[in-house]
Every structure is written in structure tokens, then in C-alpha cells.
Image 1 (cartoon, one colour):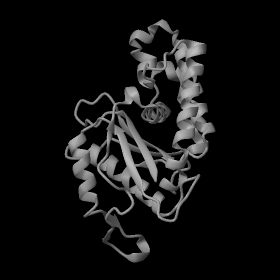
Image 2 (cartoon, one colour):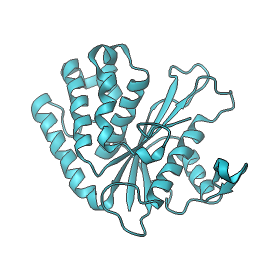
Image 3 (cartoon, one colour):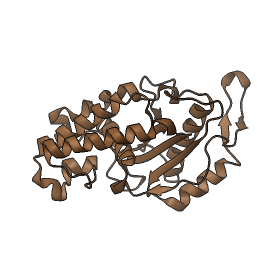
Image 4 (cartoon, one colour):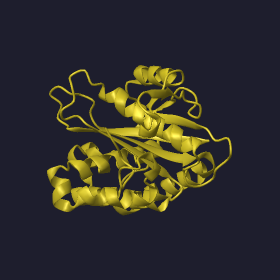
Length: 255
């Protein structure tokens, strides 16, 4: 069983939105690696506590680290940036993880374009395809399945979308097959998503970090650009799921 923890960066809005991009990231871990990787994340958080004073119960929320630290203002800003860099390196060292990234460029989209549905559909389809084709690293059984766990979002809309995709999942034909599409209902992604509070889940926080670093790679804020933080996404290269998009060198699905 593969578990995909999902978080986002940017927002889904089209009108008066402060962000050009909406980024959706899935961090995929096999059940046989879950325990050992959880222990590694706990050990990493203990290291952050010892070196920087970040308590284990405090959420690692990347965007807030830079611009809205709240109680974490007690930690110097450059140390908070150092923690972001260290977290990226920690994830990159866990080479049986996989990252699926979807980016919606909202510029030029019509007012009726559903950013949420398009991004989630793309992410779920890539997860389904990668599981079915046995393209994730690490353990692999002949009858693998996958389940999605994510921070609270538009929960009811996401559940409805997944239930629809289990009945109707149109995939455009390849040019060699002519126009039209095939209906390929989900078979490998099971159950409705169990929603998680990111404040209490280190894997969701890891997905949040990856989504934030991709957004900063695309459209960095002033501080991240000045300090080189906009390049930190490249540190995740060892765990990027390149199978998600053959047209992108980092496997990013761009829509």
C-alpha cells in the first residue's frame, strides 16, 4: 500500500487572487517504509529542537516560517530559513519517498475554470498511474493500492471528486489512437481521503514544505530570492516522481 500525503501552496482563487500559481504536492511513502521514515522524521525534529529550539509539537509550516512566524519569532529568521533547507535535505536523503507535483498557472484561465478540481484530478490520475505501473521506488508488491491523506481542504468537494473518478475518469487518447478519450475509472486509489491536521502530522508537514519550495521556485518572495531559497526545490531532485510528466525534466505536471 502506498500512502500519499498532500498539501498545497498558493490558493485556488481566480478573481483578485494574490497568487499566480496553485501548487499541489503529494508525498508518497510505502507502508513498509512508513515506520522507519517516521522515526527518521522524529529524529530530525529532535535535531531541530536541539540546534534551533523548535519544539517537537510545533508545526513546521514553511510559508509561516518566513513571513508569519508567530511564536517562532523567537528563532532568528535566518535560522528558520536554515531549518527549511535542512528539512529539504532530510527528505532528499529518504530515497524511497516520491513527490508528485502539480502546478496550475492561473494566468489567462477563464472565470469558470475550476482550479481545485483540475489540480486534484491531475494529482489523483498521476498517483493512480504510477501505482498501477509500479513506478514508485522502494518496496513493490504485485497488487499494490494507494490511499490519499491530506490536510483539511474543501473536504466534501474532494470526496465527491474521488467518488466521481471511480466511475468516470476520461483520459484523452494519444495522437496515434485518434481523437476522443477513454474512460479509465480509478482502480488503484482506494477509499475516501482520511483528513489530517497538519499540525499533528510530520508527513503532511513534509508535503507542505515541498509544495512551498516549488512555489518559491516559480515565484519567490523577496526574502527567499535574496537568500537563495528559491533554489531549494532543486534539493528535492532525488525524490521527484519523474514518471508524473514525461514532458518536464522534474516531472512537474503543469496545467
